Amino acid sequence: MKIIEGGVTAPKGYEAASTAAEIKYKNRTDMAIVYSETPCIAAGVYTTNVVKAAPVLWDKAITDSDAEVHAVIVNSGIANACTGKQGMDICEATGNAVGEIIGKPASCTLVGSTGVIGMQINTDKIVAGTKKLMELKRAGIEAGTEASKAIMTTDTVNKEIAVTVEIGGKTVTIGAMSKGSGMIHPNMCTMLAYVTTDACIEKTLLQDVLSDVVQDTFNMITVDGDTSTNDTLLLLANGLAGNEKITEKDDDYKTFRDAVYFICETLAKKMAGDGEGATALFEAKVVNAKSKEDAKLMARSVVGSNLSKAAIYGHDANFGRFLCAMGYSGAKFDQNDVQLYFESKAGRMIVFDKGTPVPFDEDEATKILSEEAVTVYIDMHEGTESATAWGCDLTYDYIKINADYRS
Image 1 (cartoon, rainbow, N blue to C red):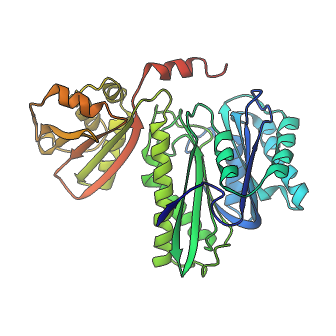
Image 2 (cartoon, one colour):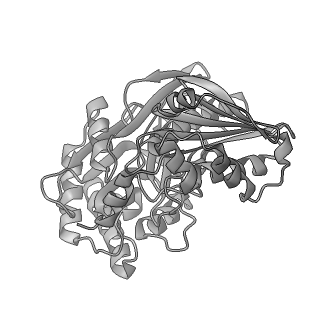
Image 3 (cartoon, rainbow, N blue to C red):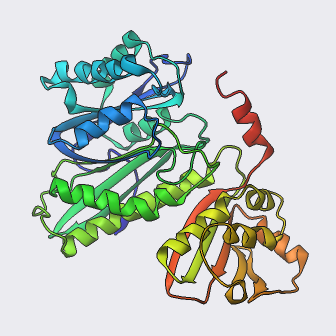
């Protein structure tokens, strides 16, 4: 696998664009398109929140069907959630705006929205913006980057990645972009993510890949414990790489799956590290646990604990907070088997060893915990399973951002 420059427009046949449609704010790009003239098959994974936004309902109906997909239209500023029939009408109007131009039904278009919940989107603005995007769409790395910036809300940086792999003697490319900074919690995290590929693969296997990789990537990040109404992860494949079609779970399937996993893990970590107000990426790695589920429970609990997150922000080596979070996670273990370490590029130190605190240098611990990426490494010594979760520190700025989010 080779990491290359770009994002959603890196694979063959994909175009993108952004525009300022004034969905909520003036003088900023707030709509994006990802487009393939060649029809795509599509797979999707969506929020587990019972309150689902209109775009989630619209997209799921399409990815659950055999509809051919050509476009993804995304807006920021207004989430189109808790908007009733008008919200679904907005999705249909968006799809019709694309379909009328290319002579396809509204189902040729997947949609995404992010922003304030409970506000209605102006139909004229979303339709005009969609038509403008169809005029502006173009190939090239820059177009994909512009699209990744247009879907940002409280994100501080855009998030994109692309890789190539060899399948059946052909170069297959996978590109992606995502947004997410607040309302992030596993199953799924709160986010929008769009993955494109020129691989040729059966639709059922495409969905299998996505449903598989999300478990240990996007479902293992948390920023604030809030699972959004709009979480959407889409994977589009247009088959232009020319590889022999992947029709079974063989070596070619594994190569493709591993590349999609890398894409999703990379974006998940970017999102966790860009949590609202964050100053550090906070990783919890649990190894040698009795079961995979126990490892996941403990890792998620550690990065999701407000006290743990505050300790990371304060560079405070208060290891009891992490042990406490493990203890109420629901996993069963003996604390006398546990070793706990702090790690970063500044070094590694053990602070708890099988039931007993380990004397350590406070200044050295502070140095380790002051890096932009910090890991709490936990060895359970009770089995062979492992899991990693990602989050961020909890800062004063998180409160400031969310106290006036609608303004």
